[in-house]
Length: 478
Image 1 (spheres, one colour):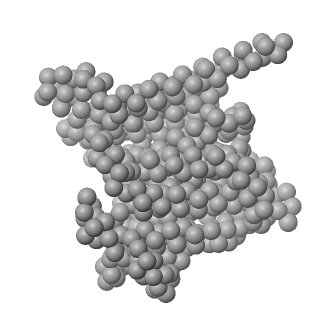
Image 2 (cartoon, rainbow, N blue to C red; image 1 turned 180 degrees about the vertical axis):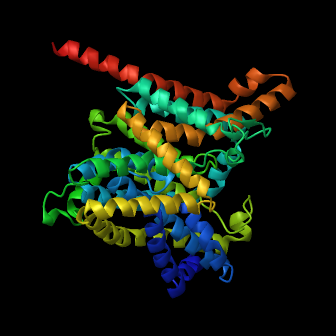
Image 3 (cartoon, rainbow, N blue to C red; image 1 turned 60 degrees about the vertical axis):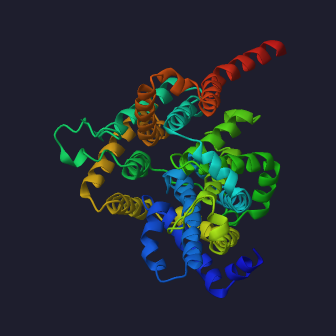
């Protein structure tokens, strides 16, 4: 490990880590240019590098992109990456009340801590974590998707019915195109462009960003407030104080992100939502979530950055012999990932400060066209397909109308993301259970499945439990 540390600290690898974090942060901040896309674009450039350097570059880009998604989520209410969906729920309300610089700094600090926890877990706990991941089969992924959908009940507290309707709309959208298992064609209405379904990134850009653009145009007030010239900076001391007071939430969210990150079907979006829900459930000020709660930003960013520790790319052969046969490469990569995460602190603070100043300084007449251009580029660049741009605009207009009647974008996007996971897991588990002649045992007879079902029931029932406790407390006070 000492040799790996020396290798990771070489000038080349340090430069790759710094440039990777900076490039990833900028890419992640642009709506539609996801972390996966950033890595995919960079992969050809790493073919001439030695494996350790290539992995460090890819890991740094991915780390920076996951964090960079928070900028768009906080400042424009459009998650730059799916992992930042939960960040927008409180980050944008903070920015609207003039605390955008504080929200960006909080997201940076939480991302650094979460990334370090995830990388250290990969360094010291990779074998047992991989065994846990291997224990998940189709039925566990089905119940995990159902658990993710059950988060709508907590995220939509006070508007549970509207949240459930939004989730159902997302599930319906996820069924468009060829079936995940079996290939049956559904709801394409004879349009071959819909055979591949509705892509998540264009849908997310449309549902989040188009309503923001319309509001920018029709509303006379400024997009974001600025309390004073002095406050448009790092606000680092204030942010450190809030992070310290929320240290248990921070660590818990990072652990949740690490646990969820080992599951290939979940990812940063689910991790952020699970951590956000848990932070809201345990907070004494849960009523402030969705209105600019700092704990919400901290939980989401710590969790989605912790998932990066589960990243192993560029053809390394995973398995029980990973750390024995290729230990020098893997250890160098993980240590490089830790270094890249630490470099994200100064990089993120500086980029975030100027991103906030740019957004609040640019007039709306220039801001709206600029955001519109990015939405078109982001939607088109996914598969170089103009149909995706039309989908983005159409879903955005629908999203703006739905927002007027109280249907928010997050449940719809959550249903769209988790729908294929739930469908594939259900169909595969049903087929396996049918072949074994015991379908109920397949769905309700596995320990991990039962644990996830219990968590799902707790999540679904928690809004009612919280309401009952609040009424009991009020009755006791009188």
